[in-house]
Image (cartoon, rainbow over the protein chains, first blue to last red):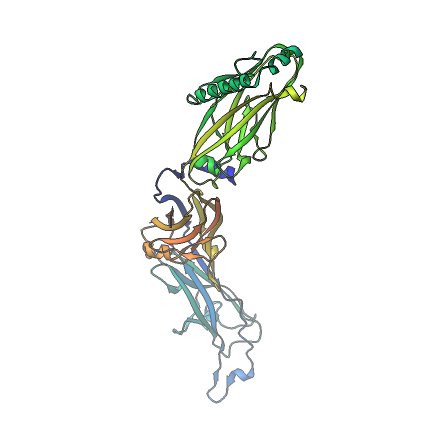
Length: 167
Length: 328
């Protein structure tokens, strides 16, 4: 250690002499911040099975399939803020599904954020949330599929794409 | 050969006493001009001189500064000449042994006193008063000389002040009969002095780059991580009995214009840890980080930490920290 110190002493970081004034030395600490965005979306969901119990004969209505309180976390440090959008990128319906696909199917699949109003999923990007500056947002997303009599037996699915970006 | 020896011994006691007195005067007169080389003859004037020793009796080593106290070097005196000339039967028939011993020292470490000849490695004294062989002169070697240098290996354990040591040399003829050996024994002395200054040492590591804040520092469930750099050394030491206090203060900071927390926010997220202790948040003003005992060089390993968050907009960040040591 003494050898190392002796070498460093050559840099002049010492004081020698009469009297004892304080001796100071400075050091620079630096770092860099990238522009970054982070997006985390809940895992895949299974909304359930529609069967006879989903139908209410009294008012001839259907109880929707729902998945509530699904977390989505979006964060970023960009000064201009963040935008989170949603859109459907893929879907699956049984072969005998009588509605136009995908429009007829997607309009029955609805979403809402943090207690807002349900709105149908679309092929177009729809803004889910946005900020005006750096932000960490924990969103709670509800999904609902509105059953109809035209929902023939089979497997249904939709693939949703969330996109976080800087405006 | 022995006739000469016997003749020397046949001097009456008053005469021998007189000769010793003359030799002492010679040494005394020479010490007044200690930085000059002198020559002594043995036996002393009045009898036939058979051994001449030339040397410099006083050596001023200078001042030990921080580099020496913190490092591993020697405070070396001037390079002088030690010369021995032997004549007559002593040179031709007898080997001689030159030895040296440390007689007195106004410091606590005899092992820090040393000498070297001809630019060789430094030799040290094992303990006070112990004779150490310096050179053997074989029979037939009439003249011998060497570059001779005295030195001290200073340490931070040496308080400030003036130091001095005294060496005694002897040139002995071990093969001579004991009864006459002392007559031809040549003895002389050297003294050396030096000064140790008041030394305060503060050596701080170089610049530290903490790295980059990016998306990988953010965990959706756990939140933000931190940039951290550990194990950066700072050395502090003094030979002042009072010891030292080490303080730290932020000097200046820089950040992107859109970094809304500003200087206070940056300092709030920055912390420093000494020697594996707790991280201390850095705020405006001076923080005492350590008390340092004297006479030892202390190494502190420092860690720096910056807690990232979403307010860290893209750009360059940094601060200049100022370490200060002072007496309590």
